[in-house]
Image (cartoon, rainbow, N blue to C red; front, side, top):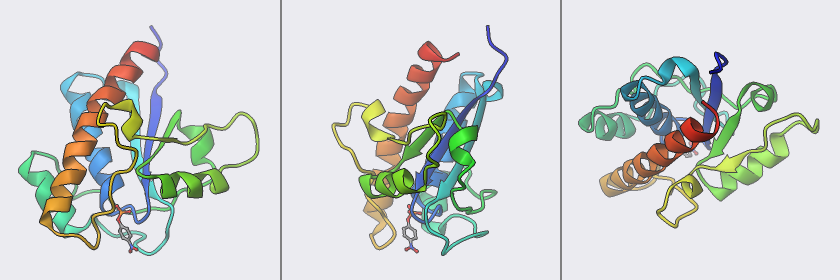
Length: 161
Ligand code: 4NP
């Protein structure tokens, strides 16, 4: 039994659509399993356009319909120290992953960023950016994130907790 918390950081481009959705979905699932006190869950963006803003209204509305509250989240940018503080740095798509590889400090103790979706079994690598999309794309984001979040939680539970 380890008292240490496991840090999980979800990362997308703007930190207003996909990664806050992943943050809230994963937090909700962890809480349902009584694991939330063992996890430090957060989200961030590689870009700086939306710093301090709440999640996109569309992301908030679609998530709320499934019982997830995104309203208190505020966008922040990925920091170099995130790679030291978080055990999992999870990119929403391959472009975010490439950006994270460039932002990652050189020291060998830092966490290597990974993609979120391969923890699940969708067979997909990228959560599509819904920002310029329609309602349907926000539902796809939720479907993909819910499936991968369950698998990620099972993975962390069996390997780290
Ligand atoms: P996200 O979506 O990366 O899922 O938060 C985006 C939100 C805003 C922008 C791009 C993607 N943007 O360019 O402003």
